[in-house]
Image 1 (cartoon, rainbow, N blue to C red):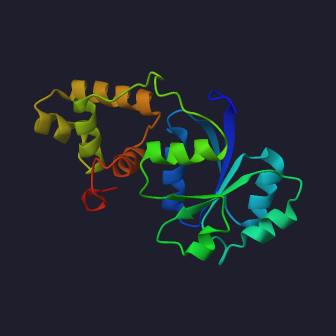
Image 2 (cartoon, helix red, strand yellow):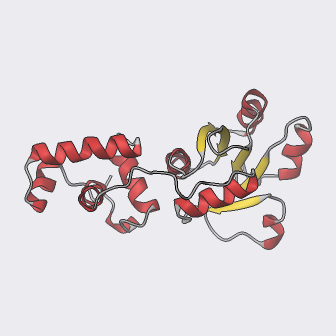
Length: 200
């Protein structure tokens, strides 16, 4: 597959927080242009696979009770997709062998991108120009994640409220994240803040 091709990824996870976090991460993977879809239940999962013919299906081993990878593959023999386990805790080696790959919720974006790229034969371009965040923008993301208002951020960083708003617009443009919750998830995934510091 070429690097710029868009790929469909279905996320089957019962926890709405984990599912939302994965969707945000998938949209930000370096070197991969992903279109994520969220499955709510087993029937919805099979319908989404038939409709979108995804390259990757990411599924929690506890999806709809105890998930059976063999049953899913057997019920959709005409579909070709890679099955990725979503690790929210440790997986046994026996469970891990049922999947093509596994992604942990604590994996950094570049680690996740590398695993998925290898799985579907995409080589990310290391020279790709990325909109990187400035140090000031990272500071603002951290404070937003901690629940501070624009005024509180301005006071803490000795900036005007207008400057904080401008920074937040730039952050939203670069990350394509337009909510405080989304920024909090981004901050956790990228190790800018600890989960205990978050106020949503």
